Length: 285
Image (cartoon, rainbow, N blue to C red; front, side, top):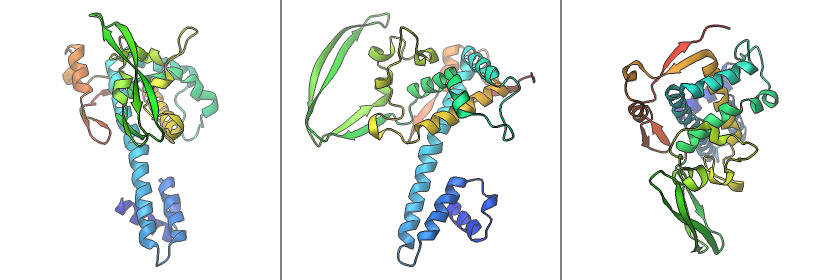
């Protein structure tokens, strides 16, 4: 980050900002430099580094890891990949938009419904923030549920009970547990199924049980940006390439393929370890 900031400062001072692809970093550096003087230089530099870290971490590492898992899922589930391809070709029959052919967000984003559902299902299973903490500001009582499951996985005997919570308490929300709760997501909650994020006349997916971007007034400020860039990335990738499992996994049982490709490590965000796939360019329409 220090190297990035130093380089950006040099380019700004040298009048080379037109050469910078990182517009957000350029704007941060320029705003920082206009406020600097001998008394607050160190403070503003710390603030600039903090903002740079936040954007790199929250704005890029999270989406990058989520996209890695999504691409692995597409290799494992070719029928899902095919639906995304068909959705993309309906919108862009002549190929994906380029820098010379602008695509309309308002016109096209709502039509990428299945691609969005695929990405949401990915971050349901691998949320960037596996746990969230909240401070309780006033005494309250939470209604929660316990349940049992049958051998088939179907839930039964859902019993509500209350838990008193005092002001000042620290609440730890287990995002992964909520995302795998069969009360909200069905007995197949541990299976990858983008259709669970598609509303129908008789079904509405449970918004209150989806915490990939937290929830409420303090939810992630970058949610729409992350969803838009991720959906566009997946759509463009599938529109151009067929995605399949790597050659060394071909012929292995599906569960073994899934176990290997989706292996991850708990770091700041769930970090994929083996998201390797093969890409084959599709024939030009």
